[in-house]
Image 1 (cartoon, one colour):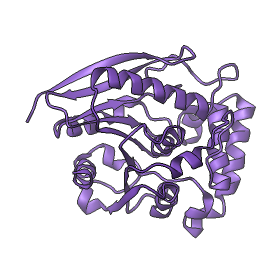
Image 2 (cartoon, helix red, strand yellow; image 1 turned 60 degrees about the vertical axis):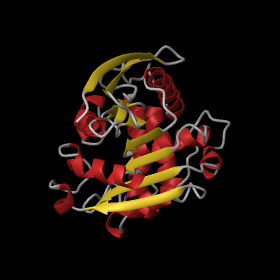
Image 3 (cartoon, one colour; image 1 turned 60 degrees about the horizontal axis):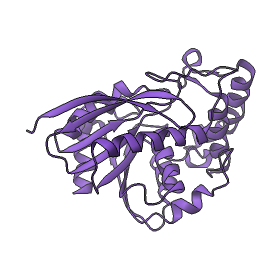
Length: 281
């Protein structure tokens, strides 16, 4: 097994937002992955996943969402942002990763919201990555969910942005959904959940038109007991990339050796790593 070096890279986005990019750098690199976390999850929680990939020769850079972990911003009435700023932050992380691990095999991926915004980033620049890795993700479009869930989701997509506007941010830690999230992030998320389309505020670009031009390789992993990321939602996201080569797979608790829900795989990521790498090479 090749040695792996850990690094913490300070990153400053175009608007001055500062955060730290966590890196795992193998001695010999076959590819570079920029990984985007789930809503409200700090970068440090993905370090076991990054270590397992680095052992296979993938240089991994774990992004930090604005408002969490090492970010110098915290959501409040006077400090708000949406998908536009999150995508600007991703671009800053890409530049930092390229400076340290320049390779022609660039992979962009993410968990849950991270997988969605990886696809939105491709919508801005279809050449930003040769491959997309998407885990426990998919569009939040309410029609993609099982009948027991789908009928109340439109209510949630209206209530949560309203609550975020009322409080000045979504108090996710208190209500058990996400972290303390910016009001405009929740508005952009809810818009895609109600419509099935990615049309965040502040963009002139048509993100879905950009996704439709992507000709790389998308691989997606869903989990058998994950109601937050059902295979139907993952397929709906993949359908936005009609020119891409698509590989989708479902893993169950027996394969994972841990519960097959939205977050269990983070504790024991080896099966997910093996599935992603096997689909890639």
